[in-house]
Amino acid sequence: MEKRRVCVLGDSISIHYSPFLEKIISSRFKYQQKCQVIEALKDLDKPNGANAGDSNMVLEYLRDEEKKGVCYDILLVNCGLHDIRVDRNTNQIQTEKEHYEENLKQICEVALKMSQRMFWITTTPVIDIIHNRRSEGFLRYGKDVELYNNLAHKIMDNYQIPIIDLFSFTSSLGNNIYYDHVHFTEEVRALQAAFITGCLFSIG
Image 1 (tube, one colour):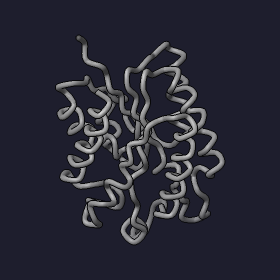
Image 2: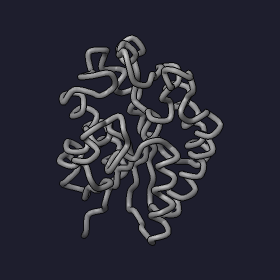
Image 3: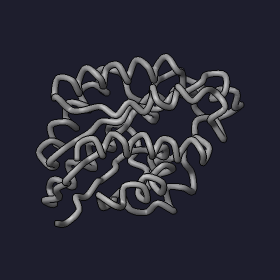
């Protein structure tokens, strides 16, 4: 029996846990993600290549793939960290919550047509004092992560899409989890991959 294919569509957080996830699930699933991982790793703050970016970019990508006739066995989707970026000078958030909600509804509509099974992965935590101690670049706030995760929860519930709560899992690991302002250490990435694997294996 051919293994089902798991496709992960997300930002730099997913790029980091992907090598661990691919290895752990290899006995039961094939692994797939957007191409050009090396290109994406050149600047994690600028979505490119395998980094799917914000909800606008994820929706655009899925629509393009749908036009090509692409289908997925299992699709894992996340977007949020790029949506909540706040311009340091204008204090403008990248994606207003109403726009984020509408994007997620459209993402669900398209993804459910393209996949046999879809999972939503929650956005990982931001600690303000760690993220915003940088003297340049955009800001992020933990309150926005929680707000946008709550919005996503409601939408996924409406579409009966199961949620992999990576936010709560990662939050349970404490504060000594980052190697920079928002990205995680190798140890944390491995734990995140193991957590996601547990959710995937539970579906058989």
